[in-house]
Structures are given as structure tokens and as C-alpha cells.
Image 1 (cartoon, rainbow, N blue to C red):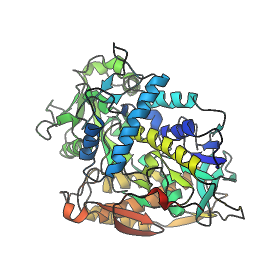
Image 2 (tube, rainbow, N blue to C red):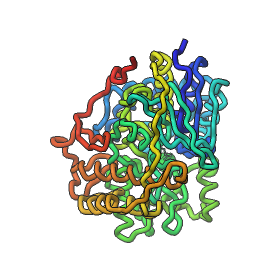
Image 3 (cartoon, helix red, strand yellow):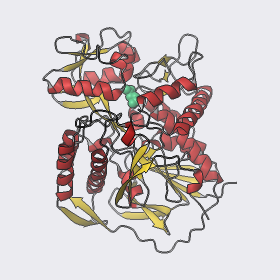
Image 4 (spheres, rainbow, N blue to C red):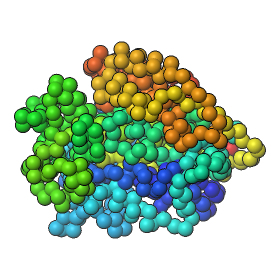
Length: 523
Ligand code: SIN
């Protein structure tokens, strides 16, 4: 029997639901989400979930593709484990009746995306994979899982350096606390820190900053993935055009019809995302418009219903055969450093999904590996928590952060700065300028009782932006999603196997190492 009685999960995407599906009925689980449960990046995931389920594929090949895309900045054992366990979990979902799209033989249809050697992406509802998975997992939850929407968790309760609960605000702004035997952060990354992004607007880096304030390590923040194809109307991104569209034969071109990826990379339009995004960036800088030509994509309307609806809403005529696209922030490879079970360095605090950095994605995530990681880490964290002895926490008065620094800038300004100076192409001058600006911003101090949700997000975003920009300045090389114009090459002699860590107000560089499960010792 589990010795844990009460667990709080913050966030409601696939990692949170995989955790909730797995955890023993002996635990009471409170899933708290700051908006409605459907406000997550998982719900928006179009392409699918990568798993080597085809007889023509292998976990070894999937591992190889993951490491090549991620530029050798991985935890190799984690890559092996997540892809192997992920394959089994996906097979189990198929057996349980998760409605993946099937071919005529009744087996899941597999698609191809960038940097995959073969077709290995399962999808559902055409381009509604995330939404379908969320609904399927949610339908499987037992009565020991309690979902609380509009419960904005703003901070962690820490007693004797152990996480013992959360501080949250209700819809009227009233502050509450809830204690727990373990807290699992599944809050996503920080897409909303950038002006042009594919993320749900609730993904503002809150979980990362809560963990940081609690003493956990933030790592690899410089590795930001920019997706090449966001539908863009009059300079504003209005939604994602899945890479699966290129997997079905679409290609990138300029206003004259010149194919812009030709001759750049052997995988052409399906090259790793950092390469395609940079080409798009430079084309636009040179004054070109960038389009996705979809004329050769068979059955576009039935295969990509979400994208068709998006185009219709944006007033794009699909018969023109091309969609105006631009690159934008998509995924944070870095995050809260965790071990293979999602344990952070703070006892009783776990992180899973995009909020966590497991070492799977390296410097650049392979397409459709994130839903897989979320499934696996949710599952492993649940199994781990069931096994751990219950910590003997007493519950004295636990102090909470009662005042918050809120910068005197608008969120839009912060997003503009991040996009311009810490975006697809970076250099020392611009990063220094941005860091200086962020550090010089005046701020007001607001009591927790009076602070609004928007001010909390701005405060977190500002703090996280400073950490991210410092990491981007430190790493004087280009690798994966981090491209420095002044250091355009990968520098293995200086940087291979090195990780930039933010911890307790300090920044340092460590030799990247796997964290053993024993680092989180319960007594
Ligand atoms: C996409 O559909 O292009 C996004 C999939 C992913 O980022 O894994």
C-alpha cells in the first residue's frame, strides 16, 4: 500500500494526466490548474506522438534520430529508457482503445516529421492528437483524482527544505494554502515569454520559477526550440501549421516560388527545426516572404481538419495552395532538472512534461518526442511516489513569500524584447543589452493578497527571462536551438557535456551527469 496519502499535481496536460492515470488508488490526487483543464500545450499538439512501433523501425533508430536532432547534449541512458518505455506505453494505449488514426489494415497510421529517419508518428483526429489523448486519458481517471480548475498555484510551501504543499489563489484573488506529501509540477515551459509562439497563453514559466524559488535547479534554459511554420497574418502568428504537413509533401518557398530549403540540408524541408527556422529567419531578414506550399499534400482537408479551420478563421483561401508562415517559439528543451523519475533536488517536489529537463531532448527536441516523454515521466513519477516512504513532515506555520517584485513593464514589451534579442539568432551585444535592460527595470513590490494573476505571471516571466538570457550569454557556441551569430559553430572542446545551472540566485557550469534516484533522500 502506498504510504503517500495526498499529492498535488499542478497543471492538466498529458504529463499530469499520465501521472493521474497511473497513480495508485491509495493516493488522493488534487490536480490544480489555473484556467480550465483544457488550457494546455498538450491540447494544441497537432503532429502526434513518436514511437518505434512499426516492424520497419527500431528503438535504436529512434534513439539515433533523437541524438542527432538534439546535437549530442543528451543523457544517453534517459534517451534509451524513455523511448523504450514510451513505445510500450503507446502500444498499451492502442490496446486500450485510444482512437489513433488507423490504416486499412486497422493498425495505427504512421506519419513522418522533421529529422525522423522513417514514418513513426502516431496521430489522432488527423491533426488533433493532443486533444484526443487528453480526452482519452481523462476518461480513464478514477475517483481518487480530483480536478480543480481556476486554482492558480502561485508558490510552493517549503518546510525544512522539503516541499510540503502549495499556495494558490482562487478566482476572486483570495490566497489559500494546501499541504501535501508530494507536489508534481506539470506546468509546461515558457512559450508565452515570446511574442510569436505556438503555446497556450497560460504557459508562462510559473512552474519553473516556483521550483527555482524553492531551491531546485534550472538547466539548459538557452535551448529554445523555434518551430518553422506558424500561420502568420500581417506579421501576427495565429496558430501552428504542423510539421506533419511537410511530412506529407508540403515545402517552403518564397514569394516567387523558389524552394528555400533546397540544397541547404540533406533532409531539405524536413531538416531539424533549428536549421529550417534559421533559414526562414534569414529569408525574411533579406526581405522575402515565406510560404508553405501545400499543393502536393493529398487529402489536406481530411488529414488536417484543425489547420483547415485555422486557415478559414484567418481568411486564407486554401485553393491558393500556399500558406503564409513564419518561425516562432515552440518548446523549451531546458527546465527544472530532474532524474529519471521526475524528482527535483528538493525533496517531495517532482517535475514532469515540458517543465522538466530530463536530458531526453538535448539541445533540440526531435518532433513529437514531447508527448511521449510526458506519458513516460507521468507514469514513472507516479510509480516512484508510490514506493517512497512517507516523509515525516510536521506542519508548523510555513512561511510563504508575502511580497512579489513586479517589473514596471508590460508583458508585451517583455515578449518583444525576448523575441528581438534572445530569439532565433543571438549575439553577445544584443544579449548583454537585453540583460542590462531587464536588470535595470524598476519594479514595485506587491503583497501576495493584492497581486493579480497577470502580475504574478509578469514577475515570473521577468525572473525567468533574466535566467534564460544569462544562459544564452554564457554558452559561447551554437548548438541545437541556441544559435550565436558571434559563435556560429558548435564548440565541443569547450562546451560538450556542459550544462549551465541556475540555483539559489547563482549561475554555474557543471559537467552534465545523470542524477541518481538516490539524490532525493527521504528520511
Ligand atoms: C507539429 O505538429 O509540428 C508539432 C509537433 C511537435 O512539436 O512535436
